[in-house]
Image (cartoon, rainbow over all chains, first blue to last red; front, top):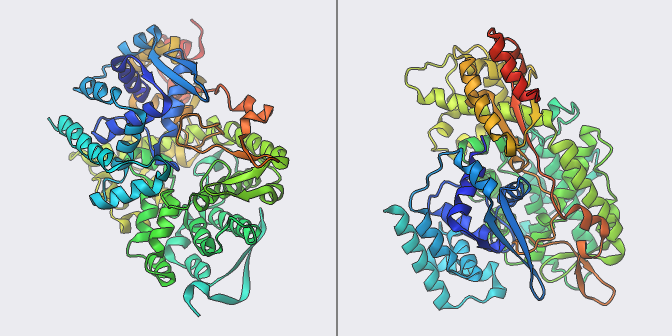
Length: 168
Length: 433
């Protein structure tokens, strides 16, 4: 019962605070690709993998007062901050969730920019293709972001290292 | 004449209750409709278990796919003389619209959840694999199957083409809202599509709506909102969906138990249980096959599988109560133990269903997300996000209502012989503490 909600709360309990909805979406997707058993379904939405199920589940957690959502006004957009509440922690205690080594990976992802995580998640989405075709795809679906060759290489290296972490 | 330009000598029409007529003139479209992969969609209900609540909801993925095709056909006709529209994309749009749901299986959502599948991947496999559909698309051009698959996967370079089939105001949603409203018989779900089609304008990477058409779009957003809560999230339908998931789960558990011998071998499901599904296995499944097994499994020796199938086939569904995990989580945990004590396996008979378990959504302005919001084309040529201009849309796309329900077989609880145990369970469920 509500195991998927508990898994997400576990993620927030380890992440302490997540800033930005896009960053949250990308972090969960990347962790999923590293075999962390989050079950939210992702689809490609115009510019990258996005999970409506995750958005809804986060809203449910906020409405239940298990998660706190703070809205920060920026110059031409809003930014959202998420953190687990005391009620959320109490709820989580009822479950035996244990995802080994998730903390390391979360802290690596926390230190990346949303732009970079967007690139990494898009590369992962097309990971069934050969490397050159992945690069072409990224340029096709994200022409406005103009990712450089250096960023592309960095993304591939980052994925290798992150997946290496998950296989140990 | 090249196959891509080939037209039927006479236009063919399909009578349709929603759009009155569906018109086909392109040879490629006509040939695609005749393929076994597309005809299979006749045997898959659009709304899965909704017919157990709204008995009219027997329409199929076939009806809906033709409907989406027809809407896109009308849009591309309207766009034909517009400056930003590339007429070369017309056939691609029509084929992608027609085939967008090709990979749906029976009771897709529950089936995919239990067996960890994705119908969108099967759509890709059917279009790109060794199928009749692929043969026809290849006749248009060698790279045409890939283009169609990319449009449906939303990874095609021309975002305007993608947005006709999948965006926040696309042909897919416009068809299913009207069609589902028609077949369920509900009075909401209707909106003035003709007006919306007239005020759609092609831009570089999306379709936008001329600002004067805002009220028609508001109506569409309201329909989407009401259909969500009144039809798609109907608790009786969700109850059937809960039982359906549990049947698939139980059958898989029994298959993995060497000691259990099925009376009717689950031949069609074996590759799903073993997670090695081939396209040919997938294409063999339809609603009829699933119903056949459920019908037969009512006679299985396993009480849980037989009971769940009986419930599904005979609409003897679970009852429900509203459930708020905060502060009711402890009550939920206690119920779990009490069900065990009563000999009712809580893994199959005590289920929380949440709004996030439903594969439908409502409009969101799309802040910081990957989804493109609906944009209005203002008189000065600028674009404005819909909810910033419409009070109605702003009101219903703000803070979301979410919902959790607890499902259980009330008849089994009533039949518990230990009166104290029964009373305790009922007291927790119905809040008489």
